Amino acid sequence: MCITVLGYNALPIIVDELFKNHYNKGYSDKQKIRGYWTEENLQKEVDKYQTREELKKNNIYVYKVAYTKKLLDKLFNNHINNGYKELKYNL
Image (cartoon, rainbow, N blue to C red; front, side):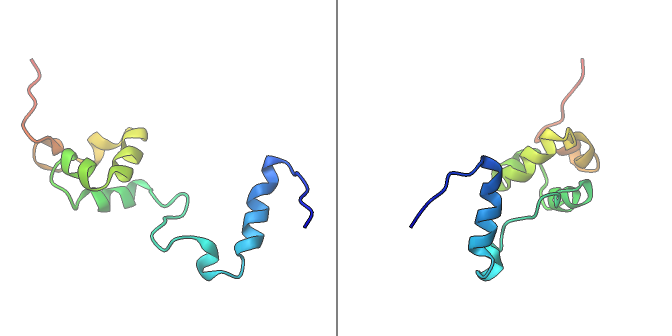
C-alpha cells in the first residue's frame, strides 16, 4: 500500500470517498447538518425548557450556539423571568 501525502484540504474528499457506501455516509443519525440551528430551530428547542440553567444542563450544545449568536435574551423573551431562575433586578 502506498500512501501519498496530500494537503489538508484533500482530507474531506478522501473521507467522503471512504464512507460513500456506508450507512448514512458514516455520519451519526443524531448529528445535525451544518446550518440546522437557525433562530427558528433554536426557539423550538429552547421552548422545551423553563430556564436557561435547565437548557444549559440538558442541551449544552444548543446553549452554546444560542450564546455565540447572542440570541439567549431573544429566545427566552417569552419565558417567566426571561429564563432566569430568579427575577433579576436592575438597580
